[in-house]
Length: 455
Ligand SMILES: NC(=O)c1ccc[n+]([C@@H]2O[C@H](COP(=O)([O-])OP(=O)(O)OC[C@H]3O[C@@H](n4cnc5c(N)ncnc54)[C@H](O)[C@@H]3O)[C@@H](O)[C@H]2O)c1
Image (cartoon, rainbow, N blue to C red):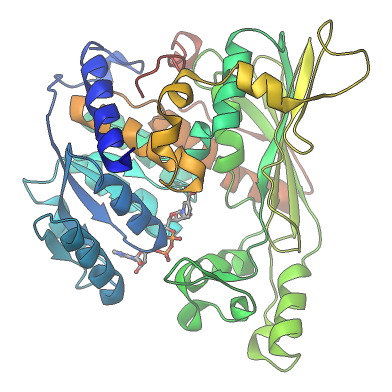
């Protein structure tokens, strides 16, 4: 089957079904007049590794025109222009003369929506400017670094009525959507406890061609490549969970955060920091200048969140020690639990007492309608297909100018874990309260209908 054609068929079908949905969940006052666009004019701000991944996915769609791109790295602009030309699309307007040239992209009339895939420190300021300019805004994870930035996103959305979607692709992972299906069908019973996190050995770096370069992570900042140009510096200066959303996003959706439930408080603790130093000494030698750098970030950071409905969520950040990748999910309720590590499920009355079932059969049985229908078309889109679904949700929501499935309140509540964990660690694990970004409306906001098969 022609993947490009079948994806297009899917997009056309989902657009038709989507057209029947006039009001999306969210705050009524935040919805502007609904106007369905046939084609979305898209600007991409930041076309590094992640931005070009998004670019390649939107180039497969016939309902998106990339009208502008912006990046301060000419090499990344060249890669993006070639990808656009190779697919036979017209050349977009190009920006990136300096750090603030993105504002000129935001002035363009022929940009309806933007996707921001820049380093973290740019996210909230660029998103704020984008919403002020009336552009439907997609923002990479994490959305904000400080509490002020979290509020900035919420306040700007409420002031302008412009929507923001946090592009958390893990929410669309096949096992996650199957487990969400089980949660919605009450298989786990009343929810009690969750575990999740970002447990990914990031001591190496990813090169321009997407390949992994072990040993190159010794250099960072000006001498770094891709993420090591900016990401490692956060480990030097912040003892915090700086990347919480891949883990907490899916869990927050399962327990209806900001929609009938909310994060109440958090405690965080950090271990000592030895991983990055040891790596530098091993691969660069003990006399390498970076061997003198004191890394502030603990190697393993553990946060426990309490929710208004009485659940706890343990969130782990573990990126600087040798380990295989795992987001460490566990979803536990009054009837049983799922654990991603070991891929196992136990449901009282259905599993043999005290024995795990392999999760495989359960995940098949509860496969989400989206994946059942369109899974084969999504494979190849990146990260096992989930990148296709997250971009599809963004494009469909933006074309209709409706609230997205993962909105500004999600972006703020999930990203707030970073500054709150930092404060808690600084104060020996003292509990920190989450602000209520919905200003009380979490009590009456309805959960997003994740079980529809459109996007
Ligand atoms: N959801 C996921 O699975 C996933 C995966 C990878 C990265 N990310 C996120 O995507 C974002 C980008 O990560 P990446 O791996 O592509 O990093 P990257 O360093 O490869 O790309 C960032 C790009 O932004 C550009 N940039 C920096 N400042 C700019 C400015 N002021 N104006 C315009 N362009 C600017 C850089 O030149 C670079 O090309 C990060 O927030 C990261 O956390 C998400």
